[in-house]
Image (tube, rainbow, N blue to C red; front, side):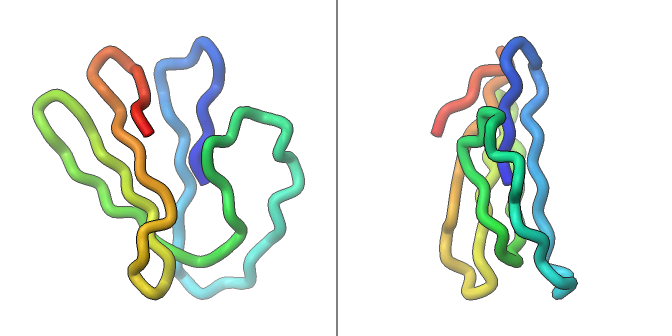
Length: 76
């Protein structure tokens, strides 16, 4: 899950592939650029001017990717 809240500098992400039972997403009223109720994992690439988050499914395929810049902006 990737959540952006208006007026907040922080991007919120939730990721996990631990194999536990999946709970359905129920509150989708917030600004959620990406949200799937599936197991997966997130790769984080750290660069001097940005962070790149890439969400992958269990098969390794890319589900969602975004870049967080130093100024707090998000590029998808």
